[in-house]
Image (cartoon, rainbow, N blue to C red; front, side, top):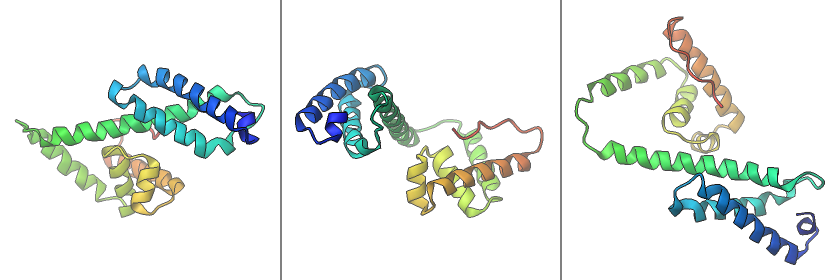
Length: 170
């Protein structure tokens, strides 16, 4: 990686080849076979665009692993959205509980500021990433996180002390 940062084209090709082999093994254990190549390509592109953030003298593999983990989570989110879209189209019997829950949730979210309810809906219910929600709403990523946190606190206070604990934003 250090030689790559210094402009060595042969080292860069070798780095990409070795990283691609490692990434294929990483994703083969975590994703469906039909999306492994896409995930590898996404990581290689991220490696290329973020290579300037690598700190010489630090280990390369943990840096690459962090990129791979982010891309893996993005892939899981995307596949979850596709699965949810497929489920919505399927006929559902006895969906009264879901309808009542959706109405109740809509009513709770109506008590929040629009900026809070929108990002909670996008991130917590629709599965968008913080970055995607920021782009969709025009808010900065830190503001999206703050609005989610404050909105969740407000929802907890609306529900009272007997409310089920909602997991904190990760």
